[in-house]
Amino acid sequence: MSTNSVAIVTLGCARNEVDSEELAGRLHQDGFRLVDDPAAAETVLVNTCGFVEQAKKDSVDSLLAAADLKSGESTRSVVAVGCLAERYGAELAAELPEADAVLGFDDYDDIGVRLRAVLGGARHASHTPRDRRRLLPLAPAARQPPAVDLPPGVAPASGPRAVRLRLDGGPVAPLKLAGGCDRRCTFCAIPSFRGAFVSRRPADLLSEARWLAGQGVRELFLVSENSTSYGKDLGDLRLLETLLPELAGVDGIERVRVSYLQPAEMRPSLVEALAGTDGVAPYFDLSFQHASAPVLRRMRRCGSRDAFLGLLGQVRELAPDAGVRSNVIVGFPGETEGDLAELESFLEQARLDVVGVFGYSDEDGTEAATFEGKLPPDEVADRVGRISALVDELVTERAEDRIGEWVDVLVECVDGDGVEGRAAHQGPEVDGTTTVRGARARVGDVLRARVTATDGADLVADKA
Image (cartoon, helix red, strand yellow):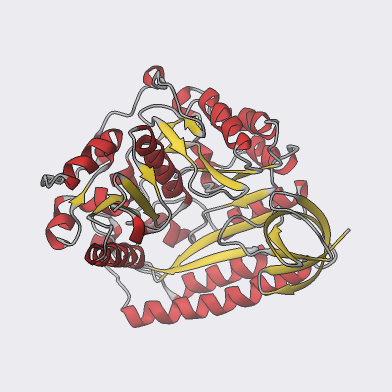
């Protein structure tokens, strides 16, 4: 048995990836040893996702799979952390006795103490969830990094976050701009368990960016619940525009990419910064969610088909080859055939590179869960299929439009003679990849190549 060994299993989004690396940093500093294989770990820490029903199911399945490892020689405890654990707390602990403890966000600062207690047989009293939006956000003046001597390979971070240890040695790493969200979308529960919006200080972000570059990172993927709000609680709503060129100027960083932009909060100066700053990917991760104005109002969001097309026009006037991705929700309460046709019309005109299509389902504690006009599940499924088929066709067409373009591909995988990576318009994990033919390269290299073929959203290119 490997004493004080921990394996961290991460589910969900890039924000969860950062949380896992911050937990790993604390545990490393507290004398724990991080291992990759859960079956070889004394403790398996499952960083759960609680966003939608399928994510919850995947999280529970991962906890049960980890609990099965306790029949082996190494694993003694399984601990749930992350959004599902924070969102349901004591309820999850009662319904899932296979987990030895369910820890909330407030336990993160003392994670080593908590894990040692669980290993010692102590029963952890899980928290009763509360609406974290009602907690007073951490004031800017209080966001001071702790005075600690950090071991090699461990990064400083801001506020209550103490340290960070990379768990993935790839050339792309998420960098958390902020935490929480102040919006009140009727379908979304995230603000209730992630809390109010809190920006990290630019100095802390630059410090962590320099550390990541020293760890071999070549692309910074800026993440938050709402990146367009960055800086508002620091007194400067245009702070992101100032920060981007500084991050892009960090030695070793080839590319900076920003995720999760709210269309209603996009401003000309931010569009210009994303489209025209050297070292910043002209990449627009715009959370449209729908295109029918009545549906958007019920979602408590702003916009319309014409407003969104106007925004895309501004983007492409400045950066014709910009990448644009989005998500849409279909089957929202009260959605009519006319609303769905409006969404179809928008998608056909928008020329988006990637679109995630989600069927509406009630989320605990959200306003939309109380709405009338719910569509039957089979009707929601039919609409998801209809929009998904359209999206598949449009995404393929958009990729084919790129044949002949020159792209800069950040190499992420080298397999024999094959080189695979992502161009500036392709975000991590979900936006497709580019295979470069005729290239010899190492992970982290940037190759100039010309697109010659496509496979769905994926591209094939020939090295210059």
